[in-house]
Image 1 (cartoon, rainbow, N blue to C red):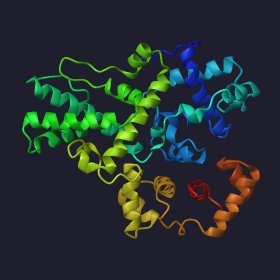
Image 2 (image 1 turned 120 degrees about the vertical axis):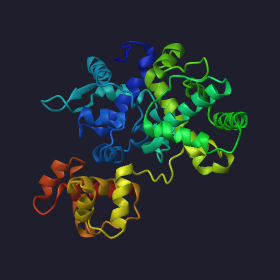
Image 3 (image 1 turned 135 degrees about the vertical axis):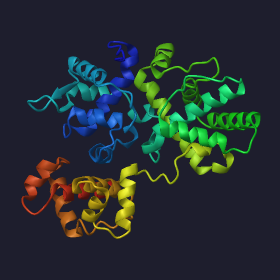
Image 4 (image 1 turned 60 degrees about the vertical axis):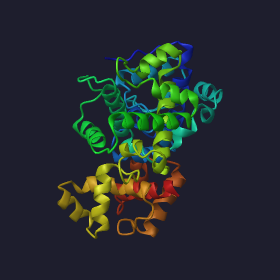
Length: 361
């Protein structure tokens, strides 16, 4: 079902500001699809790298429920107000107009974004954690009131199995388990700002209680849907960080966290293990039955998330300096433009690697 976009509402101010800010950061160097994939959290090396290159990491995976039609309608809204303009004939790249710059300058995006959103260590596993948490709350609530059957919030096998295992392996009685979990969740929610906690907890389902969707929370509160998404993700990321840092305070809830979170996507993490074992990129690709291009994507992600990994085999210091000299002189992060200036002897992969390494610096 397509979400409604209340064009003309005062509540749209947050959406307008957010999109204008992202368009300003991308500055026509990526298509509108790039911004959409950033917000959706597309699991591609391009989207992950763009979040770093254009310094918009907190917004990666902000709106995993965002539909393309709704995004396009918001872009058209910005265009109708002459805040943006297209810079290519295909009408896929946009920049801010002078009116758009003036509109954006009216608001301080830094003040609108909660600090919790900037916690990006757990982005690759936050959806899985959220589904586990929702299902665990729903299941324990049903057990507490002897409800023998209920419609689960999710049926993903990996999620349902994880929750089943956590409950079955606990040495506590049913009532002790419910009490322990309640105390831990209460402690977690009181550790974050109240607005974030309210939006977060309003989505819980339990015995004779159905959680609200973010759209419903938006409608009831009068807040922009993007703003509700932002506060929810800020709460989620704060809670995941608290669980990761203080597992002893939340021995039961901490079991919902995926072990060994490094910030890398799961598949890039597997490639990293192969590469650290001494395999070449080509050998890792063969072993994993992947293309060499996919392994190169993983290497770019590794450059962003694990700066301790030695990449000199793929990019010498001399070549890196040459690439960055051209990129900085041309004031661009467009691969095609940089490659054209460098001419022969440099691959797109090496350009991406150089940009990734320098972004981290």
